[in-house]
Image 1: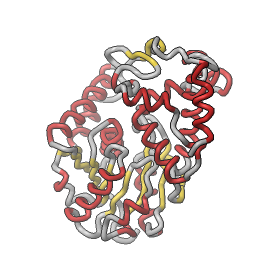
Image 2 (image 1 turned 45 degrees about the horizontal axis):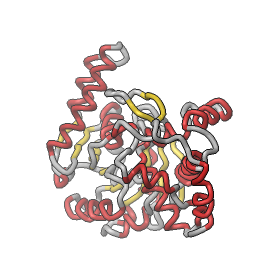
Image 3 (image 1 turned 180 degrees about the vertical axis):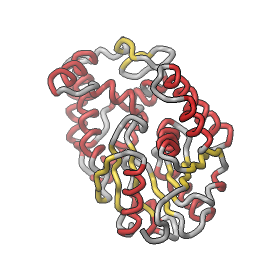
Length: 315
């Protein structure tokens, strides 16, 4: 497969929910992993959260203690400049374009020129990210789904400059860690979020317009469409700041008002109510993140319907 017959060492940048999940599935597949964040302390904190989840699985008999220990031993916490031995580095930082571009510039400077670079971005152009490096042909997208250890899909995204060899190696890596893949060209939102984010945004607009309550919107979709989660609970799980960021990318890059984020979604993010990770969003969550009752402050207001309707027509 060209430069690397088979990838054996993986770097992960970002020790949040997505990055730690990617590190976990790579280590579980027998790969050596380096993990970094803005500081070693934050990377270790992410690793500690992973260990706590694995400890719980050991207690429930789902994972053998020896397998947990072997997995954790394969993960090494490093600084951003410490991924030099990795054959592939996967960036899983916050969904902000300027941050990702800067990280790729730094990775381009600190890793050997043959190292492959991939972004876990869920919406930002791989072509633009690749252009920030001097190895654009060795840059591609690996969009894992959340939560990474559970969800089976990875979107493999080809930027304009991504070589066929790079695409093949990224696809092979996803298969090696037990995932199924779909291939997407570099378009805003790729496949999944181009369809998903307008769906979640429409549920938010329906709530704003007083069409139905949080509970009834989610129950209607769960029971009527056989979805495991309603759209508002799913938005909370993803993180409302992430949903908004992707919506803004779709709106900006397509230039179409149908992608305009709902005002209520913007207000929730402005309030710091980002969903499950902050304990409050469309729902209120327990201390361990367990789903609680709908947020009592979000009952829906029919008087907002005219304003929301106008928002659909303005770009």
